[in-house]
Image (cartoon, rainbow, N blue to C red; front, side, top):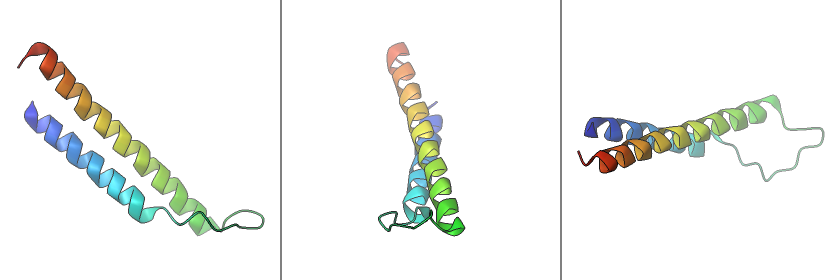
Length: 71
């Protein structure tokens, strides 16, 4: 079961790293909304951020379950 923690932790780290790399600088102001490429990159970054949080919560859940069952 320890392998599952390592795998989900690695997936979480990869998602969060991808989110940091893909997400554009959103401090610029766009009249009428951002260009399609900026909007698409922001959406992908948000999905990767959510994936990172999901895999991190799975890893934490597995660790809590293992601690509870003292395996």
